[in-house]
Length: 323
Image (tube, rainbow, N blue to C red; front, side):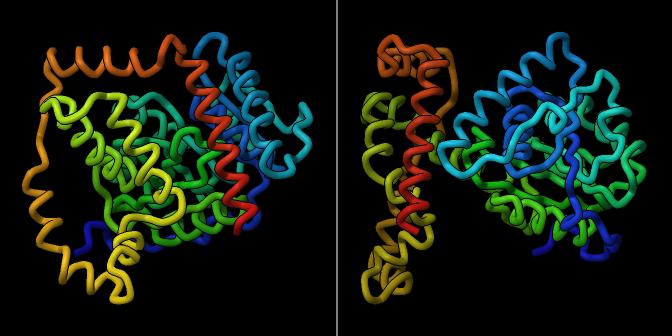
């Protein structure tokens, strides 16, 4: 089943020659992208119209580079490698790739991508960090939609290697291929999503998991803290090593996936049938909020994020050493 046209042909697009990246939108996600690009020896030209954006960007970059320095050697981030511009035209001047990171508002992104498309050289790929919109919607107002695609990272982008590359109906296969080669070259783990869908791949799977996590709380099966503990100390550990298909293949023993489906497939279907479809009404929202507050035990968002990143770094170092 193909939801993306195979008829779009264009290129070549810049990939192996990318040295300068434009980061448009320099908030939490854009700043992390900027730090990652800098850590790989690339030059970054950033733009964000919000007041105080440059100061926030430089703090985000400094913090992220400290994280990255614990994983792999970080390229020298001299001042000339990170430039901030008040005008988008100046940020896009001389760029080889564009990463857009505006807030998740469709019309805003459509207007911004159209503006980027009108300025950047036609062989420059434009990637959007959108976590929810599909590329076909984003590229509607672009004169060169063949080079616009989703390039969605997973938060925090400077640490989590995944990048989901999704074509729209007007995106050229060559543009996705160029973005894939670029992301792979700088150490990311890109995937080529074959058909666009809201939330792409990873967010759809995490949404499915959270739906049942909420349902378990709503039905009184377990508390918020115990649901999180069950994932953290159980399947979450395995998911850092293999994905669900491979893990069920291993669960089939010597017979692999075929044996699992034959012997345990009916039990799996029975569990699927029992899963809930909760509504985020006032009562459930209150239960979730009080539950995470109790689990956080007084730690604020900054402390919890620092803990997450510290443990992510330790996990990534362990996996890298083991590999």
